[in-house]
Length: 474
Image (tube, rainbow, N blue to C red):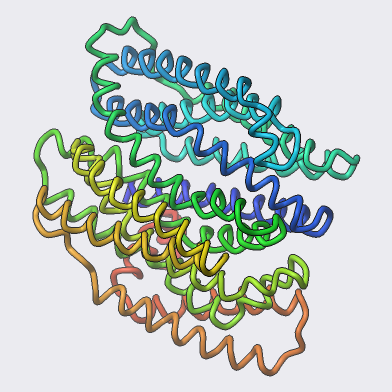
């Protein structure tokens, strides 16, 4: 139950992140339009791609700290390595600044360099917190970044800074959240040896492709779209992607919570416990993603219209991306478990297949079919990663348990929700407030149906309640 509560706290922080992100995106879309939103999304996509090396080191820091020995030495080795990598990439960005400005379509190089430094600092602090099994504090740090960023971006846009305001708000938020994270550290720095640096390198040289996989999944389509479509289409596409990603919040929280636990269990070859935790993770991965898919099929156009009428044309894109994000949510659990049992070499091969397929599919399908091609490329790549991840993990710990019955119950509950929401949607007037009300009604119906259908979910939900509440109810 400790892991359940940790996941709940982390999930709550992810909800705060998503709500803040929704507010920011809604404000930017309404005030600056889809074109400016598209330019900002392109900058962020480029940022995520250029921070792949430092993010890979962050994964190595989390892994080595979670093993429970020489934490101070691994922490220092990871920080020093990250500083070298970030400095090198920043120097390249300054050197090729004019090319960056031309690609993005705005003079952003100076702020882009600051974003590189801020992101490197922020990702390192999160890696250290996760390695100490302080996943809840990691989530709170991420939430603080998102809330501060949203607040600053809105204020700066209001006073007239537009794109510059979005980028400055992003930089300042990263730095403030990183400083806040320092107060949660328990690890005491110690002098690393060559062995510690080599150990960080040995893990990172495989995990970088895992980082590349996540970047490709989230941002390859944006990178390629920038060559073929107008910024306004990119803005609409990114809104659809953000909405789809909100449905993977539970999966992200589960993955972050389970990784250090599975990592520690792997040192004792406790594969039965690993399979048990993995099955639990898969059950609750679908809790949000599956009803989100059914809900988007009913309310997708109305939800997008909240941003502005031009965003409605992304309704089919939204549905495709939710399918892709749902498939990826399950596949990510398998890949995370592979890394947790210290086999980044196998995860490397899975991620390599994904990245190659994702790049090739995006270029070909976007070239032929525009933004629909981007969504389909994302979906097919996610399916490939799911299949390869499942069979690769099976070769390490035995066949991973797939809770098909529980997932089926989630789909039944989601179907019942969709029927109710569809009936109500046809009977009530169309406006933004009604759409939001229907979303909440759908969530309530789904929750009631799922609790009625699944004893496993009921037991877990009951256990997450505070003891005084359970006592009064009993």
